[in-house]
Amino acid sequence: MSQTLKAVRGTRDLLPPETALWNRIEATARDVFARYNFGEIRTPIFEETALFARGVGEETDIVSKEMYTWEDGERFDRQALVDAWRRAHAKESFEEEEWASPGEGVAKLACTFDEKDFTEIVFFSARADGPLLKVLAEDVLKAEATPRQFNRYAKTIKGRLVIPSPVPGNPESTTEDGIVVEQLHGSFHKSSQSLTLRPENTAGVVRAYIENKLGETGQLQKLYYIGPQFRRERPQKGRYRQFSQIGAEVIGPPSSGSESPLRDAEILEMLATLLDELGITGWTLELNSVGSAADRAHYNETLRAALVPVVSQMCADCQRRAVANPLRVLDCKVPADQSIIDTLPVIADSLDVASRAHFAAVTAALDAAGVPYTLNHRLVRGLDYYTRTTFEFTHGGLGAQNALLGGGRYDGLSEMLGGPRAPGIGFAIGEDRLVLTLLAALDQNSATPQKAEAFIAPLGESLNAAALGLARELRHQGLWIELGEGSFRLKKSFEAADKTARHIVILGEDELKSGILTVKNFSTGIQTKVPRSELAVFLSTPASE
Ligand code: HAM
Image 1 (cartoon, rainbow, N blue to C red):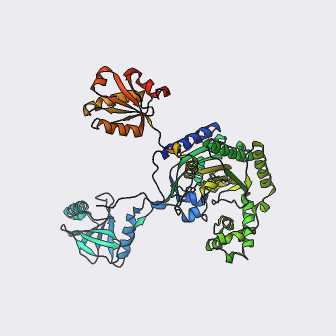
Image 2: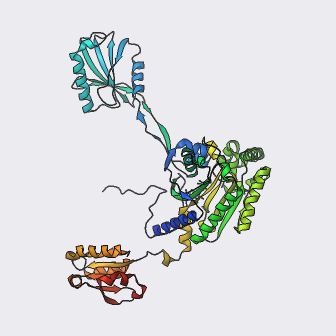
Image 3: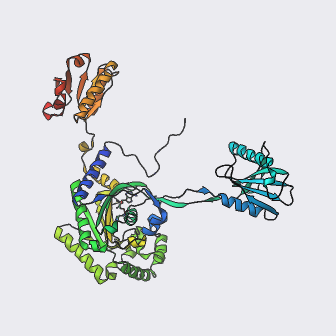
């Protein structure tokens, strides 16, 4: 028996009834976003690797360790093979003429060697297969018929096919048709581009903003997205390699008000509203400001200096970060490093006057709106594009992976990606973590599957077609119907119906002829005769229970 295949580590299937919860969350999010005047954006699931390297930052864990990256369109480079073959024969003197290729993907040279009294037609291809060799043999025959076409008149014409070989040594073999197949050692491929499954969506949204010239409208762009992201992290509860984010970005030219602290406060107030409407209680909003790009650079230097005397006692990652990107030291989760990190200078002391004023305006607006928050000066976030406001909503029920969502301002990201000045702010909610939080809060009953309004049980296979007709009629009237199977004994139909529906509708020959159906309500146990024309109303009225 062949081995069963499983979902890849860190990925999983989402099944009913849990998917109903996912749909409810997404519907609520769409509803809230619409009320705040956001529109949906859908960007591709993969992008050029350079987008994330430049946008998210080479030194971040996401880019340096966690991306699913591959070389796309790795193509056979025929010219490289031709050039390598020329180099391999450089000692011999021969005259070559380029000829039209006899087949797709095949290069062809006619070579007349001084030492040999024949002209060789040399073909270059990625591989040698039967049909190709036939085409080449015919091409050689044609050339033999017209030897005078060559610059140097050749009496004998032979064919040679050069193909790449991954192993050293250049073995030759001759086919039945007399074509010499020469294997040339080397790698003759070139890749067209490096691609990556998106580990997050902000860089993609800003790329789309630039590419689609959304800034030229002069308007503030308010965009949301719902979709899968990919990070090669060590899987654990609440942390997956494919996970879903619900996120939003507000971005626009400075003249659209995109830099205003009011935008930050509005986003945070919207998140508080969304979590409340989803029924998530007990969240904490942690807030910080990482200042402008200049403030961050200043803070990085302050940190670098402060780390010099202590870094040798810290973990290997911190030792690397202390040199490359000291800010990332604050992300360290290693318990032994925490007491050292607590003694380091805080970023708030490196902020310039404008960044301080911006942050003060954000917190003042939150106070006015009654959105509670706590300040966390270590919250620098794991992505390099952030400037000024950064935030996370955490939830105690989530355990180690306690960040329900994270976000912040990225005033320089557009320029980093080659775009116009376009300050922005956004967030992404980990939808998987939202589901975990809600599942923990829901009681068992509400997590059990909902039931259909009726199960239609045809009495015998001859009534299957009529049962489909009845199901169609009821479904068109908006009812949720499960269709049974006439080959089932009545007892089996009852058992199946009891599991999936609130009523069973029995359809036998008599019912079909008379148009009066037998309906049993499982919760009351009452059996009723109902005319077909009244069935939809009967099934959907709570009074029938
Ligand atoms: P992030 O903090 O990397 O930010 O991710 C946001 C949220 O995605 C996290 O708080 C967490 O709930 C969820 N998440 C991240 N990794 C995983 C995982 N492996 N498994 C399950 N959930 C996960 C960003 O992605 C930024 N793009 C947010 C943003 C938008 N900033 C500005 N705009």
